[in-house]
Amino acid sequence: MAPRGHHLTEVALLASASPDLAAVDAGEREGWLDDPTVLPSLGPRARALAVASATRSVLVIVPVAGGGGGGVTVKPAVGPEEGRISAVEWVPLTTEDGEEEEGVAVAVGTDTGWLLFYSLAGDLLHKQSIYPSKILKLNFRERKENAWEDSGSDELSVVFPGVIARFDGADLQNILQKSFQDVKSRLWKDKFEEEDTEDEGSFGRIPFQIWNVSKFGSCADAAIVGLMPPPLLELQSSQRHYCAITVGEDAVVSAYRLSEDRSRSIVGAILSRGVAATFSTISSLSKILWRSEPSPPKKSRPKPQSFAKTSPLTCLKDSPRKGERLTLSPSGTLAAITDSLGRILLLDTHALVAVRLWKGYRDASCLFVEMLLNKDKASSSTMRMEYAKSDYCLCLAIHAPRKGIIEVWKMRTGSRLLTIPCPKGSRILQPSARLSSSFSYAPLEVYLFNGDSGQLSVLNSHVG
Image (cartoon, rainbow, N blue to C red; front, side, top):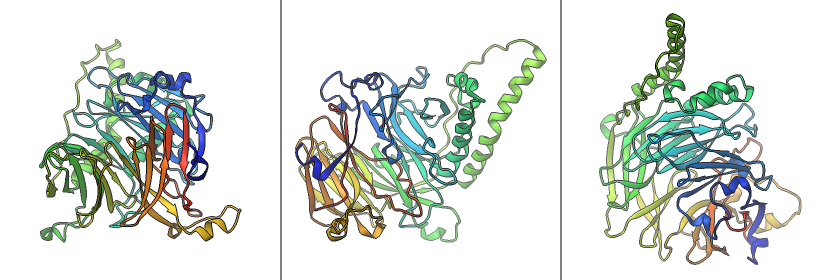
C-alpha cells in the first residue's frame, strides 16, 4: 500500500493472532474481517477496539496503544432466551472535566432484543430487555452539533426490524455512572458477578421511547436524525417530535415523525430508581422472615413496552432496489444510503429530498469525515496548530471493497478529493464520540482496519 505514508497514518499494529482477538476467529483465515458476523467497533478517541463474534457470542475489548495485548474477553452469561450478540457500540460516560479515560462502556445487543453494558474490564454494568426481536444496530450520537434544534442531550438508538428505540443520554448517564463507580470501587463486585445471570429486575430499568416504523415495510437499518417541528394542529404542544429515516427491502428509504410520550418517560424514570431498591428489600425481608432460601422463581421476560405515536411522512419504492445501510452526518442533516444495486443516495433529511447519487459501488460502506482543505495554512508551519471547525469541510468517505479503494467526496456537490487503495479484508471504522473540549476542536475522522495485518490507520485530514 504505497500511498499509505501520504493519505493514511498508522495508529497501531494489533496482533491478529493474539489470544484475545483469536477468540473472534482473528488470524485463523484470510479475510476474517469480511465475515458479516464479525462486529468491530472503535472506541472514543480510538483508544480501544471492541470486536464481537455473533457465531461464538464473544466480545473482545483490546487497547489500541498496547498493540492488542492486555485485552479482555467477555462471554456474556446469557441463556437461550437472551440469544447471541448481534450489535456492538461504545457509550462514553461523561465526567465533570470530560477527560476520564476509563469513562466508557461497551453496549452489546442480542438477536432476541436484550441490551447489556460492560466496562473496559469486562464487568457487567447493566442488563435490560428492550423488544423481543433481533437488534440490528446500536448507534450512539452526540447532539452538540444538531443543526435543527438542541435535543437536550446525547442519545443511544436501538434498531430492530421495523422498530426503533431511543435512550436519552441523561438517563443512560444516571444508571451507568453509578454502576461504573460501584465496579471501580470494588464494593459491589460480587453482586455484579451474580447478577450477570439474573433478570433485569436486579438492575432496574433505564427509561426509553420505542416506536413502530414498519408502515412501509420492515427496515434493514434506521436512524433518528433529530428534532422536527410538530404537526400544524399541534403547534402549541410541548411534546417533542423526532424525525426517523429507515431503509429496507420494501421501501428503499422512508421517513417518519416520532412523537415522544412524556408520561412514559416520567414513569420510567421513577421506576428505574425504585424497582431495584424495592426488589432488594423484599428479597432480604423474605430471607429473614422465613429463614430459609426461597425457591428460585421462574424467569419471565418483561412485557414489551407499548409503542409511542408514529406518523409516516414519505417513502421511496423502487423494486427490485433495496435499501441496505444508512449513515448520518454529525448534524443529522445528511444521510448516505447504500442499496442492493450498487448505488449511494445522499439524502437531505430536513427537506427529505435526494441531493446526489453515485453508481457502481456494490457492497460499499460510507462514513462522513471532515477534511482540512486550506493547504497554505496546513503546510505553512511544522508546529502543531489548533484548527477551528470552520477550517474543515464535510466530506463522505466511500469504501468500495470490490474496487479495493476508498474515495473521499466533498459535500454536498463537490468533486472527488482522494482515491486511496486499500487491501482486501479491511473495514472503515469511526469512533462513536469525539469528546471535543472547549479549547480544541476534534474533527470527524475515519480509520481503516486491516484485519489480516492488524494494521489500524487513520485517514489524514490534510488534503494536498
